Image (cartoon, rainbow, N blue to C red; front, side, top):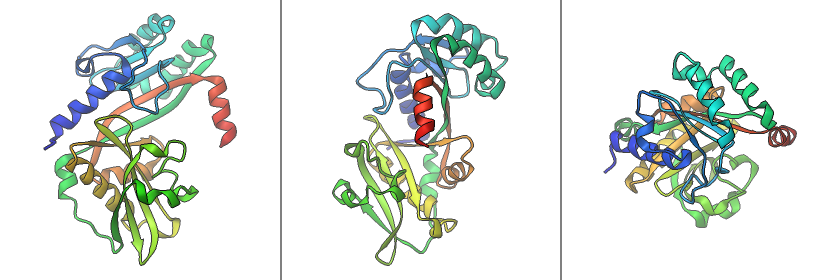
Length: 261
């Protein structure tokens, strides 16, 4: 049965695959920079090799990047007084300057949450909705805009498990798991606007997390730092901060994303 120590080890082992390094690099007192390499075992939504990616579990910063950026990224990290400074806005301006010759800049900034196993299992639901465990065979009619965080239309084959909240026969909330790698599944959550602030999101997130743990799979949850509502949901459901990550992308990629939004 998974415990908190093993959950963290599994997350760092996966980050090591994603960052082309060793799991022990994340607990070292010294930051490190590595050449980013593709891997068939990386999280499936990552486009490897990275141009530049920084990860911190709190002790240091582990970066992976294109070979030509390694010296500059090493100087950037060593110029900061502590790991957190690399992820703060003034530091990001300096990182963007470093990326400018590559016609790139910082794109994704996110905090990842891991389950506190004891808190997840001790969670007591407080919601009147009926919950139902769902599998891939139930998802086909649910690939709709209102469930776009819980399910992934672009890669439906990754959607492996879900929990729905029902008011009578009406689906009012949905949490889904994406099998993003062999040992970790990512949880996404959607609740219809008129049913929010009733505890449905945390109940669904917690139930799905428990289902993952019972299968010896580590559930993880990602939220933008500015998405306070999503962060609160993760904390209420029994998750705790795991790691922070920022990823650079070419300017053309960023401009295309901005146009779509």
